[in-house]
Length: 161
Image 1 (tube, helix red, strand yellow):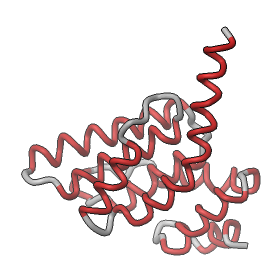
Image 2: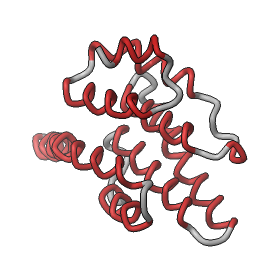
Image 3: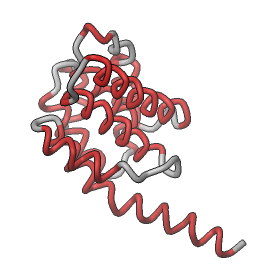
């Protein structure tokens, strides 16, 4: 039993240690195919131990769809990635970082894909829980909010204070 606990605990600490790297890589992943591939390689091996990392893995797959060739492959990758993100949200509905990942995908997805239905819900979770978040996550969210077009001035006053 102690061995199982140790393994689970080590996965948790590994996930916590790597989150800053994952966040940084995610910020630049949409800029080039090479960045998207690097981000995907960083998170591809993660399984369902961390909902947050699962959401980033889903985001990485949706980004791969952006650079894929052929409509069929683009659609399949996007659906696979969005499904992982939705599962992460379902499993941890009050996790602000998972909500930020989904919001960032929905904000930047073409209207044609019809994947924009949760922006307001995700913003609300992020804004309401913001004061209770760890400092590093607050700073990460603030960075996103500064460049986002979906946050209102009122939202920005709460988050960027």
